[in-house]
Amino acid sequence: MTTQQIKILQEKKVLVTGGAGFIGSNLCEALLDNNIQVICLDNFSTGKRINIEPFLGNINFNLIEGDIRNLADCHKACSGVDFVLHQAALGSVPRSINDPITTNDVNVSGFLNMLVAARDANVKRFVYAASSSTYGDHEALPKVEAIIGKPLSPYAITKYVNELYADIFKNTYNFDTIGLRYFNVFGKRQDPNGAYAAVIPKFVQQFISHESPVINGDGSYSRDFTYIDNVVQMNINAITTNNEKALNNVYNVAYGERTTLLELATLLKTYLSEFDNSIKNIEIKHRNNRIGDIPHSLASIDKAKQLLDYNPKYNINNGLKEAVNWYWKNLK
Image (cartoon, rainbow, N blue to C red; front, top):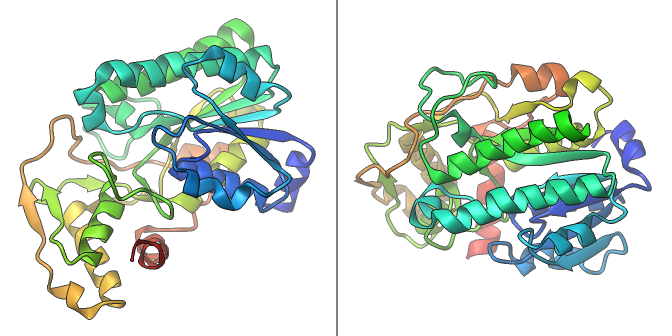
């Protein structure tokens, strides 16, 4: 965080919804490290108390246990707040296919509750987690913000609806928002457990346990994997920018390079072998592709660079090294 950004946020209150989650807890940490006042709203359905335990004794940290599906909780959390970083959501394409109703309740109704509460509290700016899934069946690479396809899952539909609501709130209520389309974020505190665990922590845990990771398909599907510190940078840039042209837009949050799933698994095996040499001999297995998965994803980050001064520091290699070091210490 730059000196200017710290100056802008001093004596301000930042609400992080989903603050006990993977991305949310990293945002809380970055803000608290710079003595910024943070309010965390979480219902702990997917967030973990262990993620925020280090913050509980911090005078600048206030935890509100509540649910974005409850408008009263949203109003309570937004009271006196200057900026909102809205990360609360039910992620995962497979989860949304198995339970589209709950995904819609959280990601659409909950999102609308937060917009209303933030508007009513005169919040200065509302920055929200959008998703690369919005690009749907649009095949051209790299993905450019202005061109999307047809959604391929209930989750993708909910995240696109978020963007539509944000646009309506600007046009109807003159309420400023910025949407951040995350591309396959990874890093410390990302949960390796559960049916809907992200691929990187899941593979890491399997390698550490001397189990074979299983790739959906032949491993040729590719993603623009994005280290968490890049995402934190983008969120901070979004709430502190004084560029009026940057407001009420959506932006890709990525590194701008793609890696196949087979390349990813191979890199993880290599980096983990530095801690345990036997990992290099673990076989990588394959199974059928998942329904709703997009074959390839690659972001153009030109718009973010131009309007929000985005300058990602971590590519797949140095990001994975940081993540592997953290997981080795915390998963063993």
